[in-house]
Image 1 (cartoon, rainbow, N blue to C red):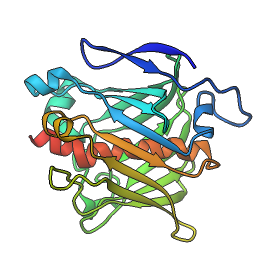
Image 2 (image 1 turned 180 degrees about the vertical axis):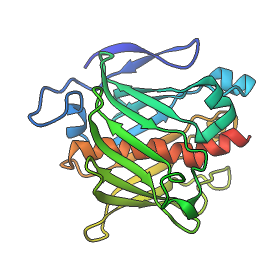
Image 3 (image 1 turned 90 degrees about the horizontal axis):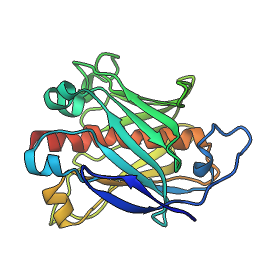
Image 4 (image 1 turned 45 degrees about the vertical axis):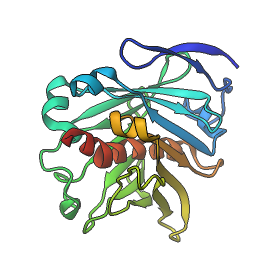
Length: 253
């Protein structure tokens, strides 16, 4: 186990314990070997003091950890200043995910869609938000696509050939507060038999964190033997859910 320092919120540094390195695994995309040993990951958005004090939207940064709070990846959003300030949660973004030596292993991309977000019209490409999950070389691993619904969040987990493997149904309301601190759950169902095979949860981060900051905490559970490409795509689902459910709330504050 090694200890290093990873950039955290603006003008801050924090000590990080990294997950022990994992050797090469055959048929596993480089850098995703960590995922092959995990049945749960935690994704924690980092507090940014500029956003807290000035309400100026900044690029998001996240720690990706295992169930023992050992960091296995670090994720950083890259988006345009105009997009962040004017388009809010609907902005285009690229999230770069690096391993413990700073090597990029994954990319999550979403294009801007001026009509995006309406759940009633999500069967049309111009209205459905989509995150592309790809390697650092640009090879697609999977897609997370918004699907049509009457009011609940509805998303599809697709493989690299756009075959739908799973679907996610979100709650009518994903809000949390002092009187409602339970985790908000997004069950992931198999398209084969409808069985719940994974779960994404928005965790309660505590009163101070939830009220005074916009830093969210998520967990993703899945079978340990699930294909690492699907695990990576489920990570992409977390970012899409974060932007569509919770970044929207932050942008309207």
